[in-house]
Length: 216
Image 1 (tube, helix red, strand yellow):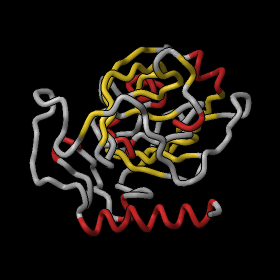
Image 2 (cartoon, rainbow, N blue to C red):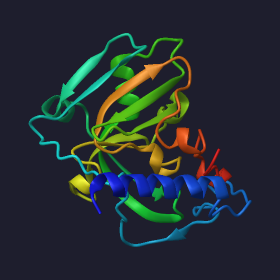
Image 3 (spheres, rainbow, N blue to C red):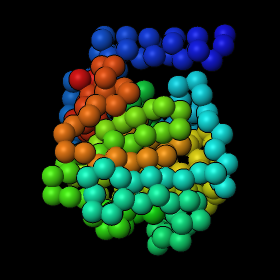
Image 4 (cartoon, rainbow, N blue to C red):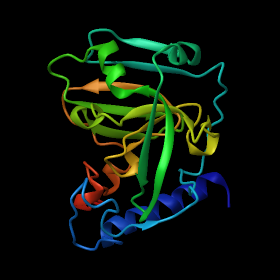
């Protein structure tokens, strides 16, 4: 099976999941009180999920553009990125395919620092993350502006591996992990909501695991 056929079958399968409401339990949990969201099970490994393509972006050629409705658009090389204040954060991963992985140790640039640097304009209410494989996902600015959200360069003390989105990926732990874009190349601040790849294919626009917002 070639990559295009794999990608097509994967997308068709995920769209069927959304249409059928697969994995939905119909229950709601309270974030902060219940560590494991409804319908999830804990794994020790970190499953690899992508669209059939793992772009190889060399560290010396990687850059990240942050633009749109901001007071100061920037483009960071990896050297620029690493020159920003680095933070460490530990959080859980909750994947829409029903697995969760606890206590992931991240290192990178805090989302709050990103916001401080680019200064989103008052009319900016959303952002769109763009990836090197053509993937996009949308976030509310309020979800990105969270204490444990960051752009991660390291995981468990090592450089983020290619299969998990290296050199740099987004990490927004309060949402299902499809909202944490891999192979990040652009963050675009926008006024109106712009649903991304999976949101346009039947997945929930917000993706709160404790509300079990798997599908729209």
